[in-house]
Length: 291
Image (cartoon, rainbow, N blue to C red; front, side, top):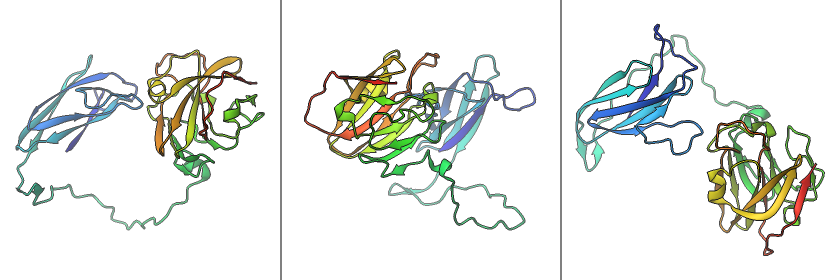
């Protein structure tokens, strides 16, 4: 496997960090194109094109069973094309296993001894985006990839508790099935942040995961694919939020994406996630208001 960095550079050969355009690739020879990835964009892998991010991105090619020359070329509108040639060398294989390790470059070590670091203690703010075990009564683990590191799971949601951690808005007149639930105290400031894996939430069997999503926005694909609409609604700052639910029969981990899939700026509220116990009662039409 070869990892190849592609950069947009100026006349001095220095990267242009504000350049963000599509690059088209071609591969010839004894290799298979494996492509790259665009951050926060679904279905962006394995294509023969990729957008540069801050003037750079990385792609991969995989050798085949045959030895020979591999040529990778890149083209982008407004830039000179670039070509890179690699050589895939033959190796002895017995029973499907290589009999020798690939040659690796010799690392350049500092002359002065650098003591090893055996442990590092992270401040509380630094672990807020990491996985939290036992995050709530019904939530096994939670992680967040957005810019606000303090996003976390709170337990026992009730009226007069704050919806967001950065916006003064209180729960009021919650539907009965949500009272006492865990909820993700998100940041309303992250409502336009783009990420395919904004939240990862692991829950046990016998729970219901509910997502209240702003009616002013088109429903993102991750929401309609994993959750079903209900008659329940919330109101945040006078705006209606429709509640979607997923009834969890077996322990599972869910990936929740961005609040809005389009890059277009739109007035909206960040979605709110609840995790509660699974009951046999049907979904009612009761409305909860948040003030």
